[in-house]
Length: 183
Image (cartoon, rainbow, N blue to C red):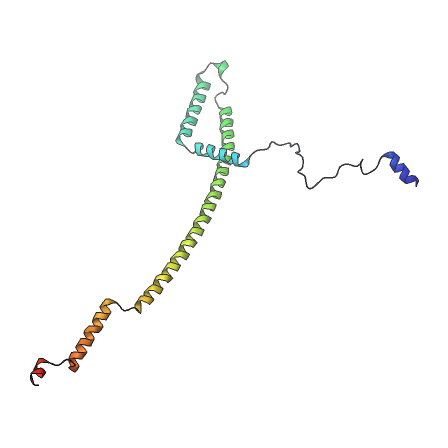
């Protein structure tokens, strides 16, 4: 009995416990350490970058930047040069550019592969439908030909009449004119 009174006095009742998580309500947003990004938007950006990296314009721009960089660091006054002769900083910048370009190009290629896979699947299904339709039409044409094989055509009827006329002439079913004069 004392334990019930003691628990009531300390306040350890159902109301004082931490609230239970309700499954019928959405969870509250948690703070995230990493930024949230849209993978689709990032993929589209990577495709644009990869498309640009594969153009002649990029090669011309990159060549101009390197030429300006080298000329500046050779002919500029000493106190304005930021990368001396072995051009270590230029090498670092080109390596940095390559280290970002390679994964972006791979991401763009993966997205293109996914699109190609979907298109291939759609083409395969369309081809299957076309083949099924062609087979159906082939069976229908064969059935029509078989049905037409049993139908009397005009030429067939003419040939049958000609055969009958010849047969009647041979049997002399029609009296000849010389036979009529004998009567």
